[in-house]
Length: 406
Image (cartoon, rainbow, N blue to C red; front, side, top):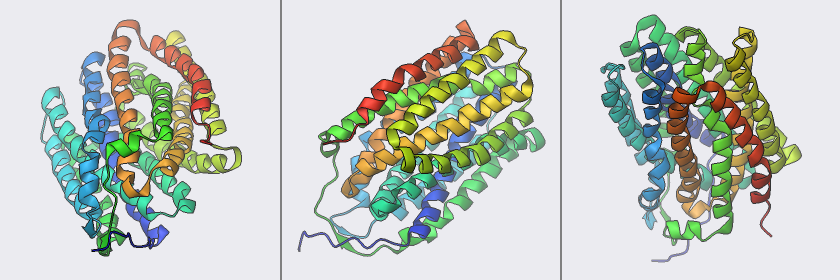
C-alpha cells in the first residue's frame, strides 16, 4: 500500500461555510445558554455571585480537550479510509440535544445537577469542535480561510444571540423547561447541514501523517500563539464575565437582557465579525488586535463609571454593554483566529487549532471563577476597571508575539 497522500480536492467552499456555520451556531447556543442566559436566571433566583461563577467549571472540557484531540484526529483521519468528521459531529450533536433537554427537566435553583449535566454536554460539544475545526482547515483552500473564520466567529455570535438572548426571552414567556426544550430543538436543526452536506460524502483516502501534540508544540509560532491567546482572552473576557449579573443588579429584567444579548450578538457581533475580516485585509492582524484592545479598555471604564455613579443613562449603559460584549470582541477574535487558522497544519488541524482554543478555555475559567469571587467582595467597579488595565497592558506584548516568522 502506498503511503503517498492523494492530492486534496476541496469541496464547494459555500457548502463548507454553511455546514460548519451550522455546527458553530449550535455549539454557541450551548455556550450562550450556559455563560450568558443561565447566570442571569440564577441571579434572579437569588443565588450569590460566587456560586454563579461556578458555571465556569463547565468550560473545563474546552480547556482540556487538547489532551484527547490527537486521538480524535487519528480516528477522524485514519491511515486509509474516509474522513470520519461527520460520524463525530452527528453522534456528538445528538448527545448534546439530549443533554440540553435533560437540563430542562431540572430545577435551575439547584445548581450542582445543572452544572454536572452542562459539563457533560460541554465535554461532548468540545469533542465535536475538534472534528469541525479540523475539517474546516483541511477542506478550505487558504484563500478561503478568512471566510471560514468569519463563519466561525459570526456563527458563535448568532448562537449566542439564540442561547443568551432568545433563551432568556423564552424563559420569561414560557418558563425554564420549555425554553430548554426549544434550545435542544434548535441545536438539532442547526446540525443538519453538516450531517447531510459534503462531510457525509467523503471519499477513500490514504494518509501518511499521524497527528500528535508533539508535532504541534515543536512549532514556535504555535507557542507564541498560545501566549498571545492567553493575554487576549484575559483582556477581552475577564471583565465581561459578570456583565449579566451586573445588569440584573442595575434593575434590568430577564427579557430586556435577553433582547440585549440577542440584538447585540445577532447584529453587532455579526457585523463586527464581517468588519474584522475587512479590517484585517486592510490593516493586518496586529493593528486590528491592538485597536480592539484599546477600544475595549475605554468601554470597560465606561461600565466601571456606570457601576460607580449609578447615574449613567440606561440607553448609554446598554450601548456600552453591546459594543464591548459583541462588537469589539468579535473584531478582535476574527483577527486572532484568522492567524491561528493560517498556522494550523491541515494534516492535523484538529490538534493545532484545539491547542489555541484550550488556552482560551483555561484563561476563561480562571477569569470567570476569579471574577465571581472578586465581584462578590470588591464590587463590579473593581472588576471592570481592572480588566480595562489588563487590556492596555496586553497591547504591546501581543503586538510582538504575533510578528511574522522569518
